[in-house]
Length: 269
Image (cartoon, rainbow, N blue to C red; front, top):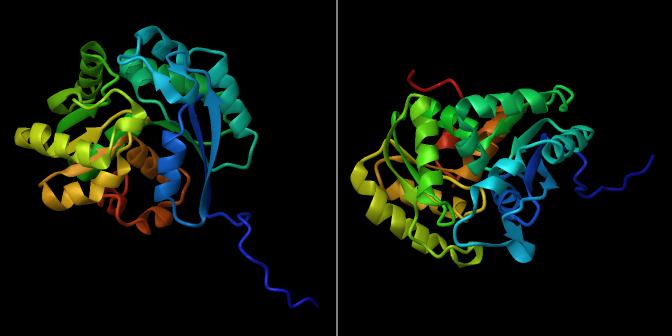
């Protein structure tokens, strides 16, 4: 009988999370992996997004037609089906703006359509996860900080989405930072939230947009400000873990906000 001690090889996972992302975006996978415990693994699938160029470059304000096209068949359906062929526990859609354009009812139709490709694997998206997260935290007054590449109309559609879900949106808008993924820093985003959002006294803030660098600011802001801080990839990953039946893994996560101390369904109604 061999007494060889095997090194960790990645095969024994508490949960495997699939994530669908725009073809030139590394944000969701990067932030998921930063948050994830050692026994939770991330598996990505990419869908062409017409507003992105090689290297992650985008126009200063993204047009709405490619946002809508991202969730139209067949590309996203095929990406989900290919992910679902793997032994995953959950699939997450790492794209916020499409739900803004579709609205809550259109998002539900999208989930219903994609569910036919998932082989029963649970599916979630950023805005649906944020609704669950706000509710779990008992937050009713919310602020939405959108990426600088969202225009005012897209931001307004996002406010409409959360208003339809029963929340009071006390502030929304694209943040006043450079419209370039590579130029957004944790320090600049923190300053924006501190100076522009905190005065509206929300119960919680959502930094929307899965392509904006954000998870690194959560803990420091929550320690300083009197409200919960959610970000697109943080809340999406939190919700995905719970849908995967890996709530215990979520409770082991520290440094990324009070959300991970909370379970879906535990907040005020």
